[in-house]
Amino acid sequence: MHIEKATEAELRAALADLHEQYDALAAKKLNLDLTRGKPSAAQVALSDALDGILQGNYRAADGTDARNYGGLEGLPEARALFADVLGTAPQETLVGGNSSLTLMYQVMDFALREGLRGAESAWGNRAQVKFLCPVPGYDRHFSVCEYLGIEMIPVPLLDSGPDMDQVEALVSTDADIKGIWCVPRFSNPTGCVYSPDTVKRLARLPQTASDDFVVMWDNAYAVHTLQDDAPALDSITTHARAFGTMDGIFQFGSTSKITFAGAGVAFLGTSERNLNTFKAHLAFQTIGPDKVNQLRHVRFLQDEATLHTHMAGHAAILKPRFDAVLDTLQRELGASGMGHWTTPQGGYFVSFNTLPGLASKIVELAANVGVKLTPAGATFPYGKDPEDSNIRLSPSFPALDDVQASVDVFVLCVKIASIKQRLDS
Image (tube, rainbow, N blue to C red; front, side, top):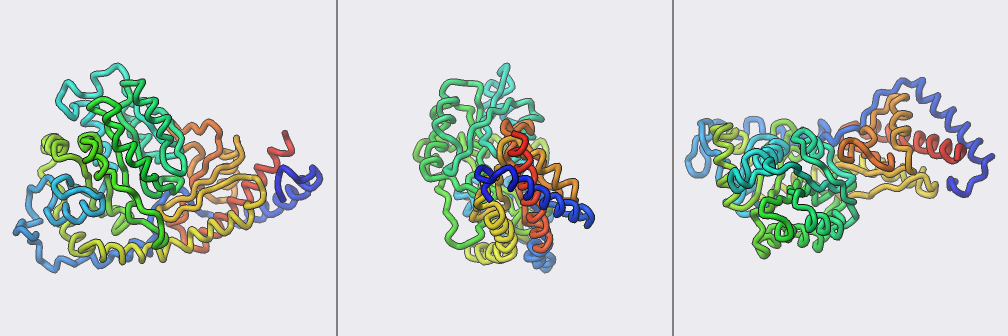
């Protein structure tokens, strides 16, 4: 039944039936959760061999004792391994602790308070600092900006990436804009992969802006495909070197969804100039990262081929969960006119757009029968979705049966909210 073509009588009859199903679900007292893109227990178990892998050998390839102090930039073999993931050179790569978000926050805070090019370049010298935020986007990026008092400017996220016409126009006319957030491959939450043209234009962006403009390239899902033929991502490093803009590009990644989510390794790639400046800043905070964990990861992941095989194990666990969501959405809502959604080929999310004004209501309806969804508005700066339509679905963590039960509840709530809105219009 298409909502725009059904008669009032058909809509009322359908709504009555849906309410009966909804009341039956309420009686089951469900307790299901699709709120966050956490790896499941089966996924983290793929890396259990990390435990004990060193077998008492704590010496790195250059003889460094990984148990001791030092090595602010990370072990050389770790820098080489994760430079391959980012597409940077080892000397342009720093390997830290377990959290890429920590590295992102540190770069933002450093640029704001101390300046990437010395005190005179600190963003905080300005009366106002702004950042471009493709939407829908990642809520934790927005939280960093909000906490640091940086004004966020939403720009549309297209299938090809940020709307670059709008991005370039804004940057060329507003000197207060100091950067842009990007999740370039399997973007959170839409799953889009930035097109080669978009990557090239983003790499050139620091030429258009001021010297202290940064592209925050959060490549969190660089190797997180659901199928072998998933689209590749063009190299921003190659373009940045050609344009001479490496100083304006900060790339981030981690093994949080590769090995252990809470005990992985994070890494940063940028120009050697930036790394030297940033390391001087970090030296006041730490004597060095957890090199034992870095060494464990190098010996476990080894090389690109081993990493690819390991990620195929993740895909085998994740794909049935995504299929359950996407097949149910298509079967139940495909011809309904009640919303549209993305079909990602990697990453951790499905982005669903309801009819305008319904996301909050759908989240509330689901919560009332025991299914937690990501709060409406979470994918927009300040938690404010102007159309109240985007909902991020995260099927990775629950068991497959629970994913199916959750999406069944979700489509029921979409139908109830959509039909009620139609009848009230």
